[in-house]
Image 1 (tube, rainbow, N blue to C red):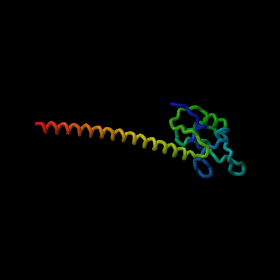
Image 2 (cartoon, one colour):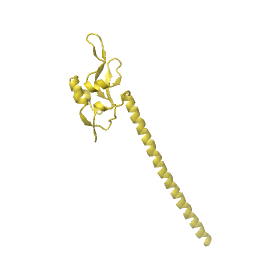
Image 3 (cartoon, one colour):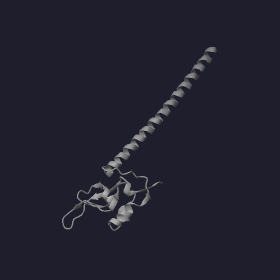
Image 4 (cartoon, rainbow, N blue to C red):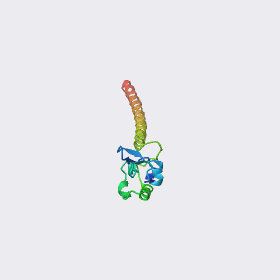
Length: 145
């Protein structure tokens, strides 16, 4: 299985403390391990919690432990086997990356179904031709008798 880094994956997300939604992990956070968005006044705190994997392939929270930039970077930059990896495209949320992946799988399934359907049509046509030929020969044989 191919190895990937969570920092490059579209399913890397962070929980938004204000909305509880899973947001895409911004580029700066992926590079530095620190969220650039702050909320609150005394003292301000990061609007985003530690990163999570939307596909739940790995438990990033438990790997990170103490949520500081150094720990976050070491965990999200680690090479790990992952079948769910999807190259991150800036501007898309983790949910949108999932929808793109699902749509691609659906389209691939449709292509496979069409290919399979064509095979069966060819087999049906072949059987029809062979059957017609056999009945024609049988009719000719009966007519001679």
